[in-house]
Structures are given as C-alpha cells and as structure tokens.
Length: 321
Image 1 (cartoon, rainbow, N blue to C red):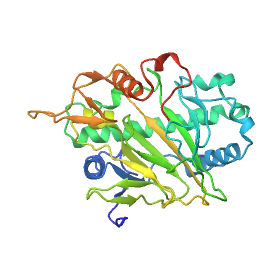
Image 2: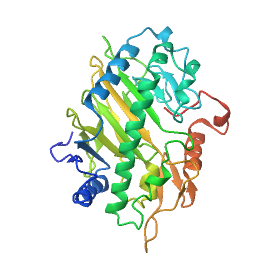
Image 3: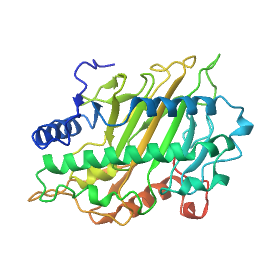
Image 4: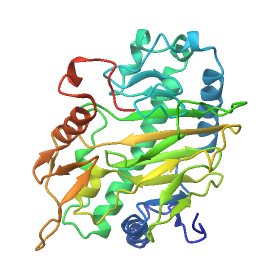
C-alpha cells in the first residue's frame, strides 16, 4: 500500500468568493486531473446533518433482514440490497434513495423505517446536489470554458432520472464469509461527481503511480471523485479512478459506514469531449468503448445492458449496484 501523505486535501470554504474562486477551482481541478479523488474541507453541509443521517442509517442496518429485504431496489434506484446480494456478491449492505425530488413520497417503495424520515433524506440530497453544482462550476472555470455553467447547467435537480444517495454498511462478522473475495470490487463510478461521507477509513484508490492508496478519513471532510461520464466529457482532463474496499484494508470483523451521493447529468446530455484542437483518445469503461456524441442516458443503458443483457429496462429490480 502506497503512502497517503500526498493525498490531496483542499479547503473550499471560499469557493464562492470571487477573489478566491479561480485559485480554488484550479487546485480542485488539478487534484482531479492527477488523482481523480480529493478530500474537501470547509464545505457547506453541516456536520449535524451528516451525523443525523449516519445515525438513522445505523439504526436501519441493525434491523432484522425481514424488515429490509421485502423492499428491494427498484427502477428508480429506491430500495435495499443485502450483503452478498449485489452483482459482485460484495460483503456490504446498501440502502438507495434515488429518483427526482418527491420520489420518496411513494412510501410503498421505502422500507417502513424510512417512511417517517423521507423529508430529511430529500433535504440532504438537495444539499449534496448544491455542492456538486459548485464543483462543476469550478471545473469549468479552471478549464477556461466560455461558460462557467457549461457542466452545471446539464445537472438539473428536477430533470431526468434524478440523483442517488446510497447508504452503505460493511458489517462486522465473527468469521469471514465463504462466498465473496471482496468488500467492494475495483470499479469506476459511471456518473459525474460522487460525494463520499465516511465514518472510518477503508476505501482504497489507485494512485497516480499505479499503487493502491488508502483514502484518508478526516472528520468534517468529504471524499470527492470523478465518474466516467464527466471524465469522458472533459476529454479526460478530469480522471475517473478505480477504487475498492478489500478484506485486507477492512477486515471481516470490523464495521464501516459510509454514504455516497452520485451526481449525474441529465440523460439527454450529449457527451462531446472538451478537447479544442486535439483528437480524443479511445476511452474505455466497464470493458466498453465510449464514442463521442453518446448521451448520458445511452451511456448508462450501454453499461447496464453489458451487465444484465438487453432486457434490463423491463426488469424493475435489476439496477446496477
């Protein structure tokens, strides 16, 4: 495991200050160019709101499985996935809150535990979306695009499929499970920007030198990473980086909670790489080549079909997890 001392940690508390915005934007973008990951501090999401969601998440995951499993993840990415039940059979539990604002009003899609807390989850998702927009503006400023809202305008909160909040619990066990080799398989995220809230370290990222680095977990910091759609759209000026959780980094007898917010562009967004005067090199993700002109929706469908087959769109519970 490589040294994590050089892992980028950036203060974004003045990201809206006109006198500091360019400098912060360049610093954040440079980290995403080199690492594809960074920790931010001084962000606007109150620690009390984060702690409240973690407390609810812990209480939910501690429930018996018969109070969770009858509400599996649906086509709106709302619902529960048990440990060892996802496509990679990873040893983690997930509770997904996807869809447009208001989607959680459909109480039947939610396990009973969450029906009294849906407004709090929606409010937290809104705060996350606002932070993602600030970062998208920063990228456009640092890349010297004519329109600082070039990326941000394609990420409407009330358009398309919405964005997802995923609560995760890596359970502590008395013995290692026999049916899995990982806590979370190495992968890149498929969207634009992911915000990861952590209560303990454990995530490893593939560093610039090609070595796995354990991402730091620092109180009141959010771990940020770039997804494939934005990486491709930026002409790989922003990097989508492989990341994983292993049993070496997070032993079977240790518990870990995290929450990931996945910000993605509206599905009809056309991905033409921003590379003035340069040809786009071949871009591969999930074993597939991405071609200029593809939409975010088509990219998502292509990835889903490669995983589940051509009938994925007709099977409500077959959502990539």
